[in-house]
Image (cartoon, rainbow, N blue to C red):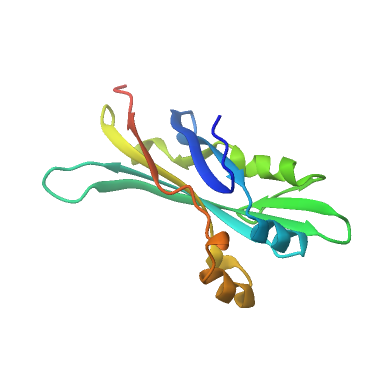
Length: 169
């Protein structure tokens, strides 16, 4: 397994066909920088966005983007109760006793349906791009100003690409 000293590194990703549609399964190596961990411990929520884009290459024009989806994960720490809390897209809330347990949610996000079956053509090759990054734009405004000038606040896996071929059925 890849181990990041600080930041986010891509480990793996795959697209699965299920009854509900296409699901993305991904994993990352995530280690918060000292500045991010310090801010979290002081009660500042951190936001991470997992993005996926599925496109079909075309020789005569730009690539056709078939699926574009994202999911935001909010990490926070309650100083009074000394509990960590994570929420996905503002709805699924989960409490944790340890920071490492909460970071597990970022390292292996739950599989989620990125599109229904009609979004992709049958028996066609697609390029899937996946990225996990801290979303500085969702931080409180006073912190955004200092975060924009600091590399410790801007961590990302970068875009990672792999090929996926749909079934011919």
